[in-house]
Amino acid sequence: MRGTRQGLVDGVRDRLVREDGQRDGRALDDEQLAQALRASGRVLGTTALRELTRTARAELYGAGPLQVLLDEPGVTDVLVNGPDEVWVDRGAGVERADVRLGGPDDVRALAVRLAAAGGQRLDDAAPVVDARLPDGTRLHALVAPVCEAGAVISLRVLRPHAFDLAALVRAGTVPPAWEGVLRELVARRASVLVSGGTGTGKTTLLAALLALVPGDERVVCVEEARELAPDHPHVVPLTARRPNVEGAGGVDLADLVRAALRMRPDRIVLGECRGAEVREVLMALNTGHEGGLATIHANDVEVVPARLEALAALAGMDRAAVAAQAVGGLDVVLHLRRARRGTTTRRHLAQIGLVRTGERGALRVDVAATWGGAGVPVAGPAHDAFARRWSLPGRAG
Ligand SMILES: Nc1ncnc2c1ncn2[C@@H]1O[C@H](COP(=O)(O)OP(=O)(O)OP(=O)(O)O)[C@@H](O)[C@H]1O
Ligand SMILES: [Mg+2]
Image (tube, rainbow, N blue to C red; front, side, top):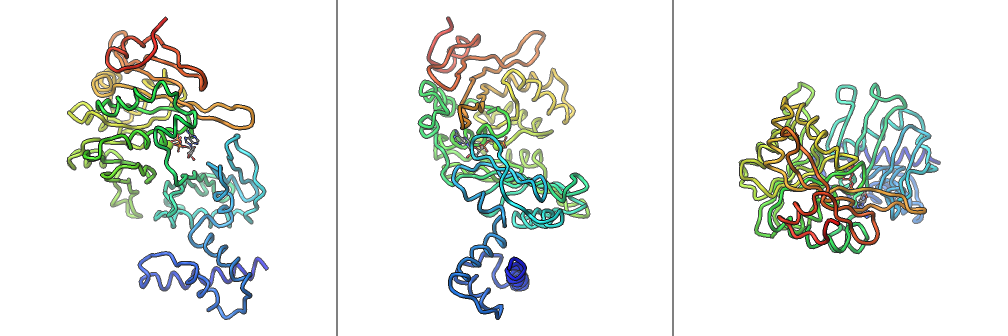
């Protein structure tokens, strides 16, 4: 049965590829898909047709056999390590999912198809890809020889409802006591770095902060793959592009940050600092482009300086230069944590850090306040220094 169905879906896919020019790459609606399936000449009952239309849609435009998992409410990540190893994060850490994908070749084919749906190629010449699927799901995939079993696929679900700051407070991610200071940071154009480990909600908080940017400001967002969709009327999304087979046409994040500077931005946003582009961002923040926002991967707020130094070293900047630029350009670090509570995990804004110069001009991020995810936040060593600039409630004691 699976063979026949697969044959039908493949037939439709072949037709779509042939007719793509006429459709301009637009997806078929259910009626058109059903028609295409009927046109295969095989007799299909109504129920079978309806079911097949759904499968075909998932296969053609979605994540195929993984789509059911992605559609489950509460699922944030779907991870494929190999044909018989699919994991899913429903909010309580990763669990094994009962999905079989066939053999290594099928997993590889799935990864290649997903990458293509995200407008990227994935093959021996370009074995690693970051993309965004048409429904917004973020895709990271790599194929052999970088991995063993066909392909390793990581999908991150983007829930259609974006959290605004009030929703993050209601969800227990941001303590009510900090809502005011976050609003103030955006309104008074502080340059903010959102830090945290993998999947701690950095991008989500960044989008919520961007939604607070006044509507008459122009926001230019630079990203590796498009992910940020803040609730703001004036956003220019710029996404990096890999070079083609001849090695031409690549546009990296640093190129895009430089381009953004010439686009009359009121705010420059870097979805994630992950390499040498950190130099361009720090330079931008030091040359009159205050109010910028970015995320950075760091497991602790104290390691943010080391992380910035490591990234900037990729761009040939030494520690002293990074420190000078970071202290001049960045104001605040907002650090997120993800903690397990019973059967679920909760994300919370754990620390507010102040960017400062330490001994011998070293870069430091000092904790102004800490929150454990419940109760009231506690003042940290840099509380008073922070409170002299922004209105952070509480007092060092
Ligand atoms: N406060 C929250 N409450 C519930 N779910 C959340 C919250 N913040 C984020 N999520 C969900 O968790 C997942 C990860 O969020 P997000 O992409 O913002 O994290 P991230 O830290 O940017 O991840 P990465 O390290 O992969 O860039 C998403 O599916 C998102 O919808
Ligand atoms: Mg992110």
